[in-house]
Length: 315
Ligand code: CP
Image 1 (cartoon, rainbow, N blue to C red):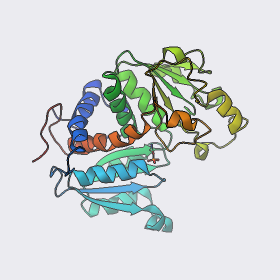
Image 2: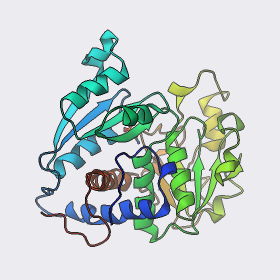
Image 3: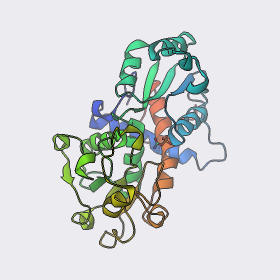
């Protein structure tokens, strides 16, 4: 089965079968990591450009590794030392990249909708690596992959997304993906960090974690996005942490096999304690590892590859 899409802009725009296809295709790529040579020739001759207007550790490096493991050529554009600082617009920047015959542009930008604008402007495949407060689709996919890997399913699971929902592109991509695959989704946070009309996305809204913690199978803990807040939306970090921060005391009534996810980077001691981040329920490092396989699957499928379970990518 093929994806038949030029771009990956958000999980809102994919249907269940397309999400399943990406997750199934990521499985054999994750098995590749156990080999001595972690590389296949699938994207030989293709050029992948990484254009990040915002900082990143996980997404940028794992996309670069994913492209390299598929044998593509990669090019990192460091915005701070590019002509962007001389005032070059986003459109002119991506048209310049297009003129150099890039096959993929992976873009992170502070403006919601930026990836859509680029996708409508140039012929290269565009992958949204985070656009403002809108979506971070590959983070959503790697979260789904990790949950499926650990729980064997998504359908019917009770999944809570906790913290700064309003400013989180990770929350939006998770909500779209989880709902499409049949999970029950709860969002938990202070009312000032809850988007208006979030219930319309089919989620249950809570302002305290204690009431729902015993029934949860998964919690996905979000970072406070101070960089996207124009005013103080809660009194102090200490008070936020007291009510919404996840520590081992709050997990006393949780299921033994509760999965703890966090997209990173973490503010230890704010939204998550170190004992939870490094504890037996945490799958945070597995999320990072899975990010490479999921991003390989996305690149491979957007390049027109045939995906699904049991595919052989060695030639
Ligand atoms: N989760 C995530 O997007 O992390 P980075 O900002 O380090 O890429």
